[in-house]
Length: 575
Ligand code: ATP
Ligand code: MG
Ligand code: MG
Ligand code: MG
Image (cartoon, rainbow, N blue to C red; front, side, top):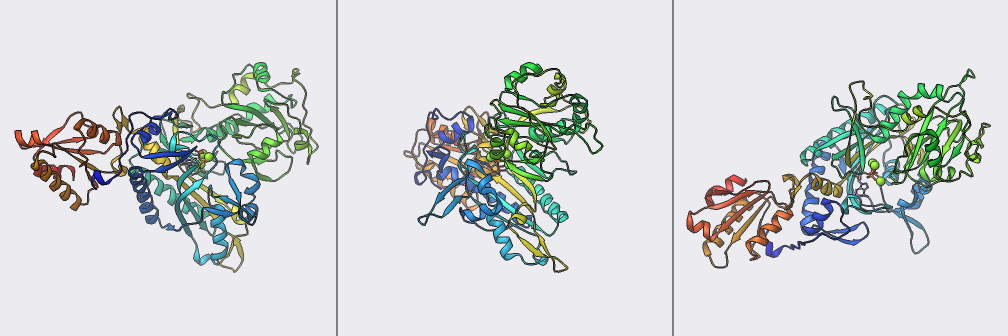
């Protein structure tokens, strides 16, 4: 590639809305252009990196036995109505009508479409297992699009879906994907960590997130520096709460009567600090066991202000005996509060609500199917309140807490979620009646897993880990170009032109992704451009060098200074 034929549009300044370094550098290097909130064009330079990320993902997915297909971005609402997510998904789902007034969505994810495909085309256990994936633009109407491609509204995702005949098969497919993800993020040259994304209640986690470790990450990761234990904060809080605190809460709540009040009032009364990004705190209490004894389990529902998750497990909180999934919107309505992240909810017959708003319709919700009452009073806590220190203990996981694996204490760092693997089970296949015939000719629901990678988010995450004052320092595997040749004084010196062209051709022939900067820019601005863009290897061929000692200069993007080579040797050095 010759730079004169390529479109290079670097900027001196990043736009004011670019808060983090990766967003600033991607804009300044001209990799992306903003079209609207959370919507970007990938310029030729940026697209080269996107394609390299995609290629690595493709190779590893194919190697793991997955098959690529391409599903439509536009999906009929009927599929979402069947799965129940038409109601549950909330405002992140972009919905629209066609000219006939029929409802559609722009896909934020493709469980419904793939399950529909599977129920039509998978007939027998003989066709299983199968794993289908695609690399495609998704749309999520994020409440707060920010950080450029990191949290876009339109973004590219690799999403895969596995179908197995039973749970054991699903776990095998899951482990295969887990291994493929590890290979992918290793090849991408990222410093990453796989973390448990649920509380592992059924022995081993049914979901992991892959995080790129970076200060600017939006997620907290709890990990044990002495062992393999790592979990996202929600999972860690669930474990900490459910496993370690259940006993303490039993005594604590013997005399507790459910009450609710404003966050600040309760915090003040309990003498605990408020968590800044939590809008509401809900404590759910299970009051009696079969023997009629007090058997209390406290469950903490953090309704966070950052609106990060849509679905939570809601067990019996509505007084029903079955466990079902509820959306944050449903819970928010029930609790009359703002939708946001809602943490783990377990068995609950009585509920102590600490909300930032008056909880008006809570009693209908809790009393509906069970005669235990929910009481709202003003705030008159009396003496039947839980012990403050126990409550304070329950509500958060902090660095220095004992590690759940009993091996020392945990630390907390920030991460960027670049991948997510999930054991879905029969959630979609049951809702959408996707069955196959087993060995005995009996119809059984397909057992599913789903696996996502944020392709475009990876660009941002890679830059957050690899930059300096001069710009991006791409991991070699995903740099838009591997080598740039910078001729200096080529307009006046034929030898510079010849040597540059010769090296360019040699590298091209060797299959190196090389660009020859023949724009005729001055050296200073030419070097600044390539350092900003982050190309790993630069060869400078100048009239002075050739004349003085017949040498050209090589400089790696991380090198402090240039090294001299003869034109004949430099190709071997960058190859
Ligand atoms: P987040 O917690 O960051 O909102 P998510 O859990 O909603 O992500 P998933 O549904 O697990 O995302 O989607 C799979 C992957 O898609 C994520 O791991 C992430 O890398 C990527 N992704 C999700 N939302 C966005 C977005 N708005 N912009 C860019 N990439 C995204
Ligand atoms: Mg999300
Ligand atoms: Mg997430
Ligand atoms: Mg996720």
